[in-house]
Length: 143
Image (cartoon, one colour):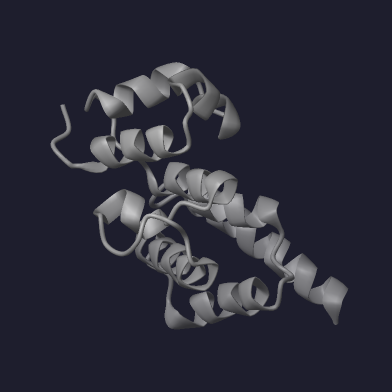
């Protein structure tokens, strides 16, 4: 059982939106059981899942995970939060992050590449190599 308040914040968001667990799950492409498990403290919210909620409902990613800030999203600060999570999770060097940020801020990074970065597990070198190959392909296409 998890003892964070993220379960309460998720329920607060769902109720704010006036949605059932099933409707909320459908809106973010998840199963209702995942919402139930989070709300009953049997599962925690991952950064990737928090991102999906923000993308679908404009709910602040950082607030959902930590309780800091406002519930409703400010897209610019949210982007910085995502990049921070990516850097910490994958222990990217500053040079690697500059590369990611170049595409992210230039609007050239695709949603698919961004989702790959958010979903990649810690230490999953193969997934990260795939992401960087994709970014390199994008760089070549835009030059």
